[in-house]
Length: 502
Picture 1 (cartoon, one colour):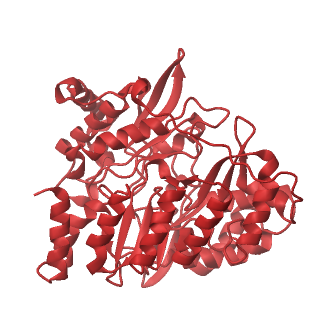
Picture 2: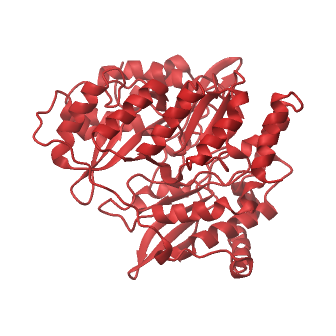
Picture 3: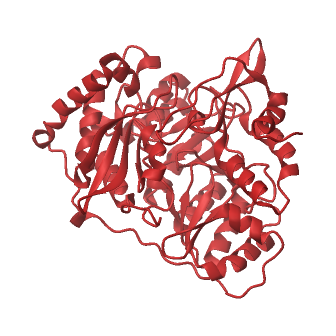
C-alpha cells in the first residue's frame, strides 16, 4: 500500500469511527494534516521558498469555496494552511490540491519540512547567487526520498542568497548560505541549529561547499539523523540534541562518515546545468500617478530597493489570513495589474518582486483604493505583529497569541501615523522583530528576534516570557529572561525597551 493510500485509508477509518484521533494523527501528521480544537481539520500546503503564483492562489480560493473553508493562513514557514476543512472532505480536498500541484507530504510530523528561502533571492545588491533553484532541486529530490518521512523528529532546511540573511540558516537543522569562492558558487553550511525547546544556533560545517553538493549533504545529514536521533524521547529527538550529546566535532565527524558514502547510496548532485533559472518579471503599472497621503511612509516601510533599480514590495496581510471572498478580490487585483508571482514571508505576509520605481505611487493608490477594508499597507499595526496561530485553533498553544498581538498593536497605533524617520524605523521593527509564540515550539522563531515572547501558563494565568535580543553577527539567539510579564503589561514593557512611553 502506498503512502497516500495509507493516508486515505486512515481518514476513511476515522470518519467511520474505527480508529481514534491519536491513531489518525500518526498517519496524517506527516502530511501536515491535523485536527483543530473544534475537530475541523487544518491542511498545510507546502510551497518551496514560499513561491506562489496567481494560479496557485486562484486554486486555493476555489478550494475555500468548494469545501466551505473559513480561511487560508500564511505560515511562518512559507506554507499555506487551509483552516476548517470538514473531516469528511479531507480526501477530496487532498486530491484537488495535488492535481493542481499543491503538495502536502512533509507538511508536519517527523519529516523533512518545507524548505525556506530568504526573500528576493538573487535580486539583492550583495547577493552571491539565486538560491531558489537549488532549494527547488533539493525539495524535488527529497519528495521521493522515503527516508526523510519517518525520522525521529522533524528536520528543517533553509537557503539564503547572501550572508546578511545568515541567521535564517543558522537556526535550522541544516542551512545553506550562498557564497562565491574564487569565482565559483559555494555554500557556507550550518548544522545542528533549532529554535524550539532549548534553542541554539548551528555550527559551521563547511566554509565553501561546492553548490552542486547541497542535495548530497542534506541526504547524508538526514540519513545520520535517521540512524542516530533519539526515538525513545520526543523531547530530545531533534538533531541539536544529538549534537549536544556528541559535541560539534563529534557530530561533524559522524556526518563525514555518512557523506563519504554519498556515491554508494546514490545521492544525487545538483549541477547548475540541470537547474531552471528563476524568472522575475518586472511589474509595471501606470507611471506619473500622484501619490496619496501616506505614500512616503509606506514606501519607507514596505518597499525595498533591489540591485536593478526595481523594488520588492511587502504586502501586509492582516493576521496572515485570507477569507474566500477576500482572496478572490485579491486575485482579481493581481490579475488586473499583471501581478503573477509572489513570495510568502515568514512574517505571514507576501512580497511582490521587481516593481518599477516609477510605478510605486500607482501601486500604493491601487492598494489603498481597492482594499479599504483589508489593510495591506500598514495603516494600523493590528494583525501585523507576527504571532503563531494561537490556542483557539492549535491544540498545544498556551494562549491566544493573535489577540495578544492585537492588544499590543492597538497601543502601538499611536506611534504609527507621524511622518518621521524614527516612526518609520519603529514600524519596520515592530512588524519583523516583535514575535510572539504560543508555546516552546517557537513557530515565530521568537528566540531569533530582537523582541521575542513565549506564551506560558503560570499559576493558572497566561503570561509572557520575554527573551533577550538576538544578534546577527555572529548569529546568537536570545535567552529567556527569568521574570515573566503579565499580558496586560506587554505594551509598557516593549515601549520602555524602545525608549518610548505610553
